[in-house]
Image (tube, rainbow, N blue to C red; front, side, top):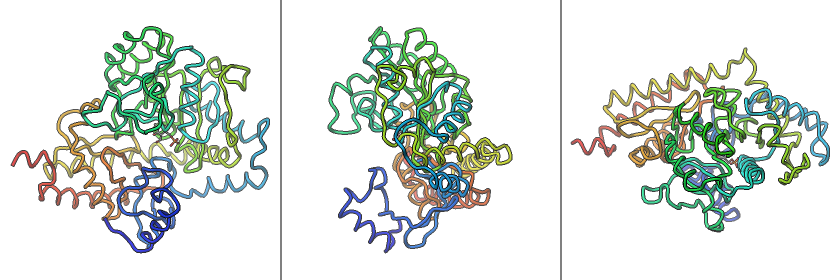
Length: 443
Ligand code: PLP
């Protein structure tokens, strides 16, 4: 990967005064990155090198960087009000109205500052309401940094489904009360319910586990989870921090027709501004202390004017039929997926090209991909090499295995075609050099 001069100098300065030189550990990968600007679909490093951005800040950017409509709304809002700290504001009520109109499970909604906070509020609410201790999550799903949920994301074959904490410093009790099942495998969830009858407070999942690329959920699996949780009095939580607003205005639940009890969302709803939320039925959410219930709700910056204005502006663009956000990103997503299928076929590379709408991914493996079990067959080295070389060509794809790519409203057909041309060069060369384990096995 190209290591450029000014970027390197700033990264070194950062390293002296910020641990590792970055404010989130996943930003420390590849070259020492330092950025000057981000506009539309283009990000520019400190040395003036441009990249077509498919990383999109892990999916936080939906409309394109520095969207004028969002910035104008934020700028207008903060002329009048920033943060008062009691009661509410017109901006908070308007944002809540837009969310409740958009998301099927959202009768009422709270605003938070990050996906992690939304998830911890959801889990605490589920435990507070049910009086039960256990949570079920799925191997491969990521739900942020809250202790109870920080285990078993990208695990090795040895640690998958076992105890694989994401961090030191978490009390074993917190981790042990989270059980791990296999995605798209209802029997693995039923087995946990059979082992812990009447003890499971909630099942939480990314309806499309994008933290390992894009595992596509089977309808019977989602419906089975809905039926099982309803029958056993557990809370079904869809973590739509990535899928929410991205795949449909109502999130993936709108597409699959399965309505969870609680929904967490964040990332793209503010097009880069910090804003997230938790929605659910009025009955469940009335257990928050703000309604006189027993579950604490607190947050100094919750509902601040900047975040609310960003969310209102972003959702308003997504709702605008003239903009046709969902049509645009689906068309470009299909163009990218079709192109990558053709290229991998032309070069005889074993690959599964998949995704939903704006999200695309190329797994390098043979056979079908249903759950995490199948991803253990992915050629991780080839995957990371592909993304690294795409960055060198000018298309920024996060250079780590299983990490997905995002298309925004600002991407154009020409961007997609340029990236496909680069992918053809990179994958062709990798195939000729024997850099795919599966191809080597055949020689
Ligand atoms: N849930 C999911 C599905 C996520 O992908 C993430 C972050 O990547 C989170 C929760 C945590 O969100 P945040 O980083 O805003 O705390």
